[in-house]
Length: 444
Image 1: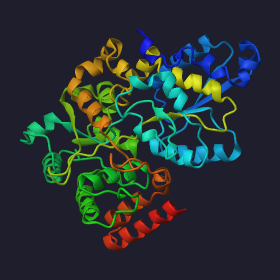
Image 2: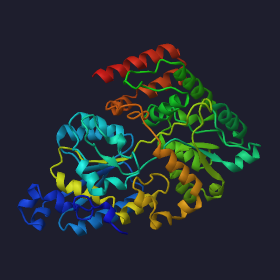
Image 3: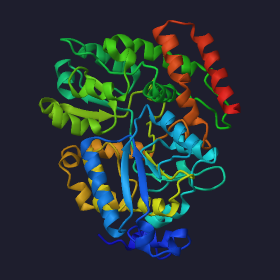
Image 4: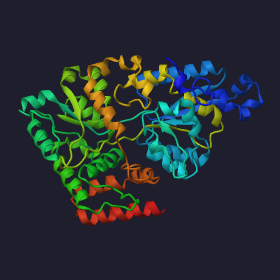
């Protein structure tokens, strides 16, 4: 593949280390001598075996190009990264590079002075190779970029079993909540539940319910970042979520990401809510239904309301306390080299989608059997994710919210769901409590 589109100021991803090193302490000693003392620690919550194999390719290629610099991969988790990173920042024993955390978490860390600006890495990768607007969510209030996307993710697609729909006489995919409920009710039989929505006190419940609020026509914040939860839309969202509880397995009270995907892939539910990892998992774990799955954007209260896709913008960033900033920047840029980057996508096809146009158009990327088997689904996810949002970036009219990570981490929105839907508390009172909690975080 021609790398000329990725050259900026004479810098390519593959030769980035020398460029970054030129103004650093690394330049003061022969490259080999300096490199012998350098070990980069890489953290990510994405650690399925095929993904780790892709990381090993990326690490091997980087180490071969930079003799003596070693990269050590370490696993965190979707639910556990916040306390792990808090401890690392507090002790100063930070990883040198972190990938696959949501963009809003990076904005929070950057606002607290914990993250190195990423502008020069984006230039090394090739700023004009990104899909238009791909880095908007990573721009901080001071104009710097806090990181970049390692990919896009359409985290709240609605997955459907077309065989079960046909058996139930459902001839079109649901677009509204009423249609979704009716479809789930019709398909819930023979030990199969309608849906695997999460109701646990965890990040999935918070993030999915933020989407449900938007699918009701609401928002968590207005465009001046005032809390805007005390609305009819929030009440409608809670009513919908409560009405779906009887259509979900009993264990959904504690569901997070892993349980939700397993419920659909295993055939325990007729619909699902997740990213494109469903495709690879179904083909590997339950091939009997693999020809009967498809996805649509998640239904909303009314077709008058625009769909709202949750994209956590899986990221790559560098902690400011890293003792190896220049080497970390070079490694970060190298993650976008086609061989390893495409292998990373193919490890879970459709789960994380390319942010670079050259990769999306690369025949090696398109040659994957899952991508070829489900072209319409992958295209819809790519389109949905590219136009997606999250709590740190609720709409194109919203400024970036650097408190979003703290709000999600607080559990305030999951608590709202649990108190109203599971405990039957008064919605007005609980919404008031939630507004007060979030306002306190915003002022903190």
